[in-house]
Image 1: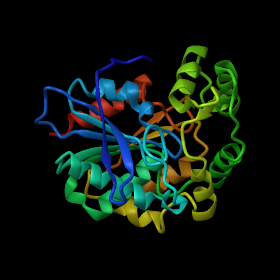
Image 2 (image 1 turned 30 degrees about the vertical axis):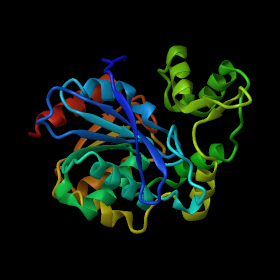
Image 3 (image 1 turned 60 degrees about the horizontal axis):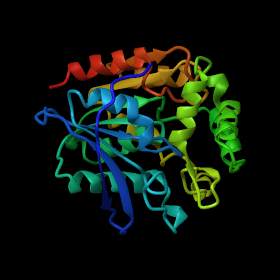
Image 4 (image 1 turned 180 degrees about the horizontal axis):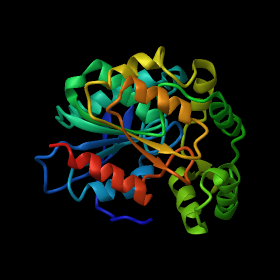
Length: 289
């Protein structure tokens, strides 16, 4: 489903270790409402949120950064910094740069883990959290699948070849995607390099960090517990192999008031332009001031 587009400003800020990091700022006339900060997944970037950010920006300001090493943000020469705690620090720095003292976090996959850590550090700065297909535990099979294709990255000479490669990896998890969306998917996740080849828009050393450091912070259930006082919505891809029904059940036991929406014909992770996702997010935000 295509949703409303909205103009945004592009800008940069500097991390505490002086990396130049990119963000999009979707401004609105309703500046009195708490803004939404959208945080993307492991190898993705701010373009993932184009549809939902445009929709939400009709009522709230929306800020969407590229984590270091992704999209238009600077790559980090120290690959050990590609870790959730670093992204947490970068996000706090962004909020300080924008003089924001309270936000709603919408986090997809890795972005959701970042949101949990933020809630454990400064809960007073978060009004609410939306987790997109992520919990404090990930299914081993899904993580191994991700590792397998991240370790088999190749550049493509033609856009059509990049589209076919994306479909080959992901089609089982998004059976309703049509060719138009697969093309948009590639244009959001690839860039054209100096050799005129299509390459994925992230630092390959992110894969090294994932393999050496792991993809989860220590004791992630501790960070999920930090969400207990906060309004929280979980969006779950029904075909996800990363967030299973068993993990969802454990999360709902720990946080009984966790709002929940299952997106039936999506894997990891829903792209958030699905009608069910939009309805769930809109209904959740409507309960907030």
